[in-house]
Length: 110
Image 1: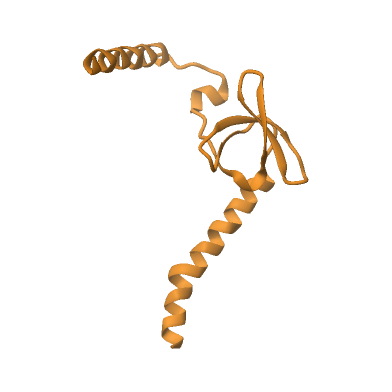
Image 2: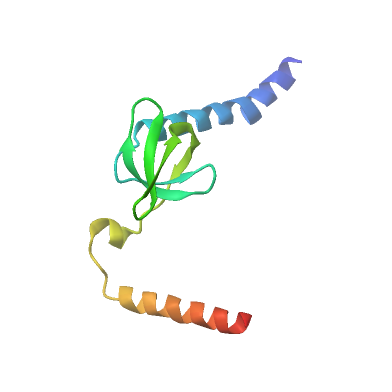
């Protein structure tokens, strides 16, 4: 019985506690301007991070929703060039390739 409990501890309980602590740290560090993903899959930017457990998230220009902090699942990763505000030499080329690729996909779908 003790061996089964030890296995359950290391395979189930300990990883779940670690995940809970990481999520609590994420919510504590939440600040204005962070881009987040909610449990419902909505992506938006934090406008106001209240201390009472409710945050205001802008999901579109002029559209703000209030969500509980517990419903915020993660922060979105910002690209390195966008985070520094500098564009690399090949950024325009990459963007144009992505547009051309999407146009090809749309043409192939029709």
